[in-house]
Image (tube, rainbow, N blue to C red):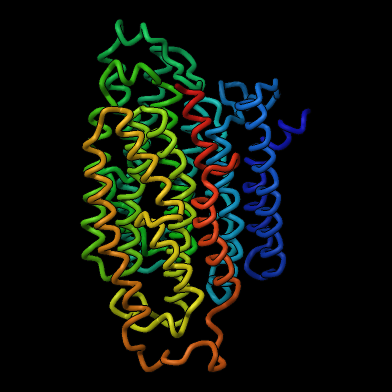
Length: 499
């Protein structure tokens, strides 16, 4: 077995093995549980980076790398390509950061074995989604992710958490049924559908079975559109913010929601390809994504609860990926794909901040942030970097996304997208700048008028250090956007291969 295949299998299996070890450790053996979490996350990072190297060699250097494996005997398989490797790397690396954060955040919580076990299963499912060879494999890992997320949403067991869990399932289960129907119908119509750069479906199929392909596309988009939080399928995401901060951070800034937009990219680019343009299905998808961008931003404006403001911001930001992919021009597609990584680093920093602030000073609402930078300077500095990045202030990664998407829209003859981007940026500033203003320029609340210099620690370093690292990542991905291994350049290679 080649090293590429070992890396591929390890990247998917290590999180599931970690979950088994965590469940075996149970509540009593906290040290063993933490060791299993950190060891599993480190192994996963090494594996996904090896997968990325394998995909790079295959995708850009033309080297014949054997990096695929068949699972069972029902048409399932794993494969390392550049698009999947990008998502797997984002999920794996941020899992490590979130594991460190969660160990600190959950240090006094109950049922930690259950929490970390399902947490690991979710990450393994996300990496399985990333590295799936075809729609069938994608669907199986996608549904495992759906089911494993539910225990995390309802983890606290409060009435609000249980309600949020019911809302999540009310959206996710019908979406899963639609995805299953679309996958089976497409298999009957076109046979096995491996993910293929440039599209797996023959162009001639659009002429003979165009109506069926349009209906199948709608079913597939419904299936992945819930996790992608495309309007009107977004309602579960704000409701799920009752989950603990590490869940919101990784699953609702990275694994779950990114699985949805990654699915959109796979279906449009690697299944339908040119057939999507021939059928005209990307035009309504782009329009719906544009509407979602504005809608989510407007809803974020009126949220005082910080996590809900971040949730509606995520609803808007996810559709940058969908819009870029739907425009189909190489530069727009590259912008959408790059935003998988850009948004993940920036938004996870913000959710980390929400958790730190809630745990340390019991501030949950934007209106409670007056003078908070005096009490938590590092935390608020990291949050501000991430917020400026989402707004699109250079040189952070969010600016890179918006610049590429605007240029790609012009290439696609869709100049109207520039108005959407401009409106979105203004709205982003309108709901993030007041947070920064309150933290830095309002009179501090009496209980935190003096910061860490007074002898009080800012917060548990296991929570503060990860959010500083992710904020720096979001900044550096923008500064070094033109370098070979940046998400932006990586995404440009992916878009070029599918052109």
